[in-house]
Image (cartoon, rainbow, N blue to C red; front, side, top):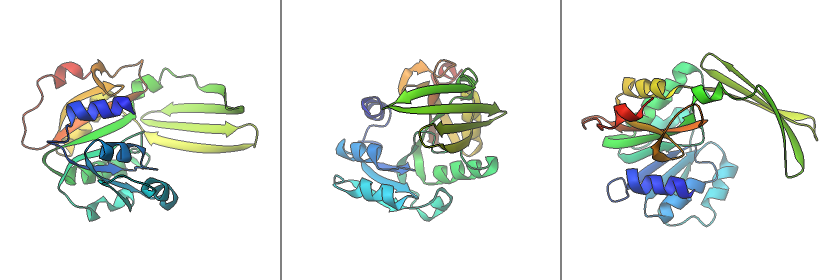
Length: 227
């Protein structure tokens, strides 16, 4: 969390980017921390149980609304920042993912910024196809498959015999920059570890892509920092 807050303070200071929409906020870990740091945050999620946790003791400046990614058009369009963290975007069919990205863009004021925290397909290609690990006394077996731009994961819980399946559309740093620009965003930079000085690359599974909506000149460093 310290990395994320430092990133916001540097790249999205609250004096200029006060109103934040946190898409797929879950239990509100980031939304609450940002509100405590001086932002006005609206967190949305489809899980009422997660939102109940998020609302419990939430600080002033944090509001939580039950809403679906497909319902973003019902929200205001004057946010300074829209953020979607922990690969919460990309799990729909390709064209729907693009629609959601466009809808997130439409929630921004002119000059507002969009932050995506997503998987880097180039790094995913280096991961083992199968891995077994033990956490808190439980054994997990993870099976991965990268097919084109779709990344599929199955996690099997050996103690219960149950499993979970996940799938996302994933991108290289350059591809996500191009996609963002195709929906009316200007790509500022893509990095890893919420640190602009760390370029996204094959050694970092997650990457953070920062965009700006309309009318502002491109960051002169963005081209140099995008692999």
